[in-house]
Image (tube, rainbow, N blue to C red; front, top):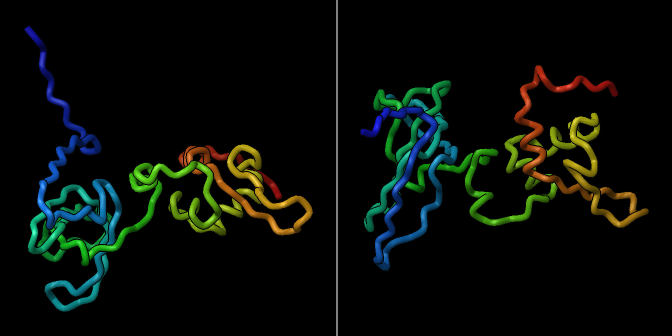
Length: 179
């Protein structure tokens, strides 16, 4: 007799995606797990912004895509008093972060220019440059200079996978490098 155990871990989800064969169907603007932001007036007329992750979606011809957003726990609670709300596509804005599936869907190369890599990693371009200058991200492994020799103008490209792995190291375990 098989032994069955219940496995429940909040971070592990399985998704069933069914795509209807209708002409009015459109591709979704956001994907499961992506971070989004909503700004608007709450029920009291107070302007506020909330961030959260797409945890569900549904499509119908008239309103189009609607997304089930679970709000970040450190943000403002939703006006309905729940931790999640449905929103139409036009109400939401994508927040780029390293956990986004968007980069994997595009099939892009791992080597990106500074601004693209910073957006993918969820940090600023200046922070990325600073990590290289301080020696924390290594030239030849995390980044490379693609400029013409002798041009005097560096053109950096970044290996997003390696940089992401380095950034996953907790700050207290990162080596302290002196300038």
